[in-house]
Length: 119
View 1 (cartoon, rainbow, N blue to C red):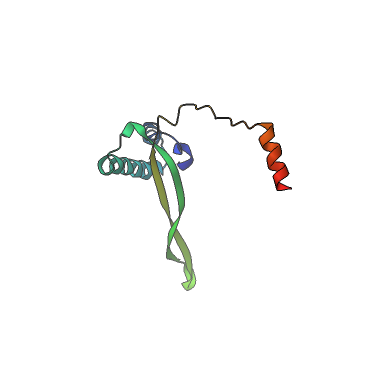
View 2: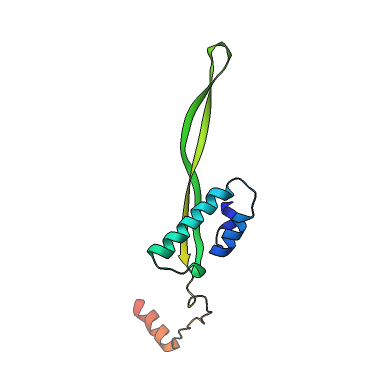
């Protein structure tokens, strides 16, 4: 689910998570709503300008349990958990405009003088 919503804006990510029937969609939606509410209330950002800039899912601590079997044996059960890191960023409308790169030109005389000075 992390790959599906990575680099999407907030509205698109919410829509994808609400209508996905996969099991991890509910905790991801809960985390996304919490992060958006924190950004709006604490940092005074607008929800329309937010997008998911970084989303990682890492391995968390394992809960080690055991299952009793016949003749006194025990089989281990590893209950795995995960840590989800979600970073929301604000879209900067000024940076989205296409800017023409500035080309710097030098005179041939300046270049030749620098080459002679080095040698």
